[in-house]
Length: 302
Image 1 (cartoon, rainbow, N blue to C red):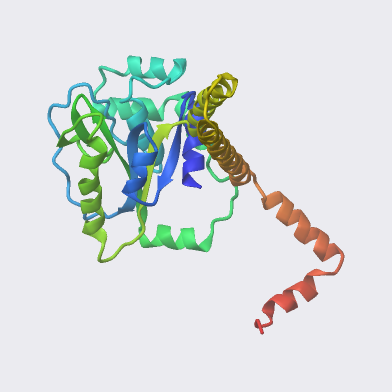
Image 2 (spheres, one colour; image 1 turned 180 degrees about the vertical axis):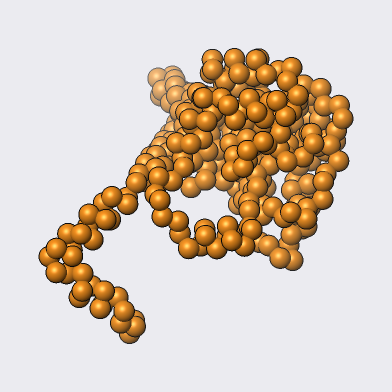
């Protein structure tokens, strides 16, 4: 549900008209136009080599990551703040203008001190005081996961990683071919860890799919109605138009269902269940039911 978390985070910051989609294959990108940027998640290693940053990256918004556990939010911002065509909302627009002349470290500090960004980021922090054993083991073993972004700016393709010294220039690109050019770089990243790690995640910042399907459905419905009202239109044309309308209705319904599932999952993610569990255990103990339940739990599964 990472895509649902990112999408709600973006909405809380005030950005409109975009969402995040998880990708299982780079081939999916052709179906998701417009794509504004990519987010790549991988297991970070302390021994990772420092990448060669570009000393001159005109027009690129780049911020150093100055606080821990914020790389996901920073990866999203690295795309949003490099896409002037997006509707960022007044607060994030003002923030971008305010820090435009800051150096990368000062930009990173400004992000960490932004009430808007901090409130949105912290709203997804788990409220429970209990930590899962799996997460505890990861902390003790030193495992950490890191997010980086890929975005085209000014005819160049950039990798933006807040742990590096600056943007990493990956070469020329256009708004049409940048998705083809970014594939080999992501594949190379995966190959670096292939021998010891298979856990990766790739996400795309795309246009809001409900808006997209809604506008397409409205246009397809209008075309169908025009054909139905016109004299001399063949049955085949009407059937084709009706089929298109039905397909878009199904696509829109599926997208609406996905967004509802994201919302429900985010509500559950943020809710603190610990008081409920404590009170449930107290109630079971008061009714004398804890002993039999514990005894049943100790028995090996048959």
